[in-house]
Length: 162
Image (tube, rainbow, N blue to C red; front, side):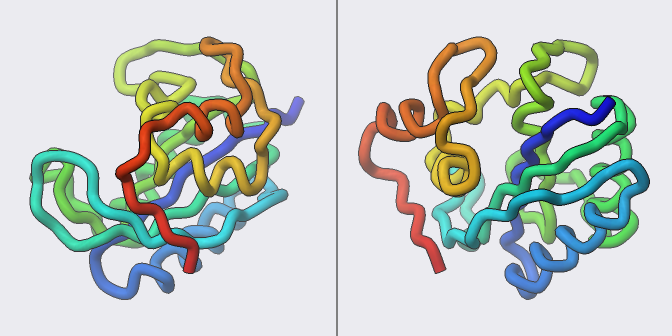
């Protein structure tokens, strides 16, 4: 059975736009997976304690028969093998970051895998592109739509569609 999954993409090293486009192509090659929507790309300020360049962010919707753990494994493989991501500095710069936001209405908390993403409701750089492709999707824990979560964020975080 296929599940509807939302994945956040981000890049702030190298050619950010090309990195996101290559990531979409790599995700599209996964067996048992089909991309069904892609948001626009957004230039965003970095969040966290590390000074770094702006990110380019997007969200895609995937129909997949891969399990959450297998999907995470494939996303990590893309980050490290294709984009040579090294996880040396927490919250640091990276050529590609892929995060599972939602996996249908699944709620899961395991070692190294939490679904829904635990901070997505606090992040405009995630909610803005997500609202573009799934404004009415309901957060399974918070019981609010993506558009309502976005509307409830305080002003301040700059997220600009390119």
